[in-house]
Amino acid sequence: MSTVTKTESGRTGMKTIDLVYIALFAALMAVCSWISIPTTVPFTLQTFGVFMAVGILGGKRGTLAVLVYILLGAVGLPVFAGFSGGIGALLGTSGGYIVGFLFSALTMWLMENTLGRSAAVQIVSMVAGLIVCYAFGTVWFMAVYTSQTGAVGLMTVLGWCIFPFIIPDLVKIALAFLLSNRLRKYAV
Image 1 (cartoon, rainbow, N blue to C red):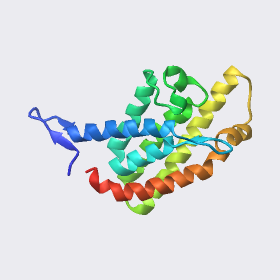
Image 2: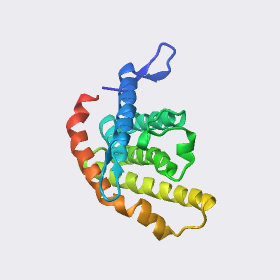
Image 3: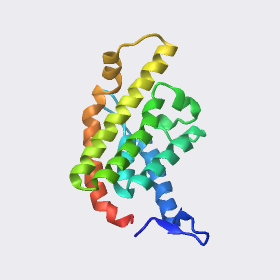
Image 4: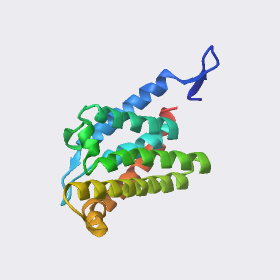
C-alpha cells in the first residue's frame, strides 16, 4: 500500500492514516522519554521510540514522527525526558542528543532507501543511527558545556554521556528490531 496519493491537481500528499501514524509515534516517543529506568546512570526509552518509529513506519513516516516529536518539545510541550520541553531544553547540553534523533532517523531512512529493509540492514541502520546521534550529541554537549562552564575533554564527555548508555541502547535496538518486525505489517 502506497503512502502517497495524487490529488486532483496532480500533487502528491500523504494519506490521513499516515498522519495518524506519525502523530501516534510522536506521542509514543514522548511517553518513552518519560519512562526512566533507574540504574547507576538512569536512562530513558527515547531512542527506543525513535528506532520503533523508523522500524515500523519506514524511513519517511518514521523521520517525520521524530521531527514532530522534536517540534512539539521545541514549542514547550513537556515531551522530553523529565517532562521538560521548550527551546531551552534543545539549547542545553543534552539538546544535541534530542536533535540527533532526527539525524538517526535520517541515517536509517537513507540506509533503507539504498540497501533495502532486510533484517541485517535494519540492525546496521539502527546501530549507525545511534552512532550518528552519539556523535552529534557529543559535539553539541562539548560546545554548550565549554561555553557555559569551561573546556572539557572528549574522554570525560564520553564517560558522562556515551559509555554508560551503550549497553542499554544496544538492548533497545534489539527490542525495537524484534518488535518492529512483528508490528510493521499492521502499519501499512
